[in-house]
Length: 69
Image (cartoon, rainbow, N blue to C red):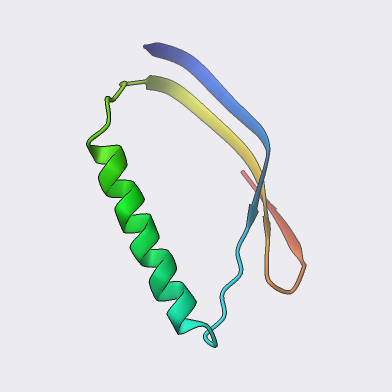
């Protein structure tokens, strides 16, 4: 599949990091690793995008929002 342009608007990402939860972070890393392994064995599709525009907000743990593009 070939796309000339793909635009993503309104993507909201929450980033919360806490050094006080190493066990939870370790468990999360293991789950992500297992999911990545499953995906790598799945049927794939190749999508080529000539131009990708992303407009997103990143909410930091303090509750501040930073817009980026």
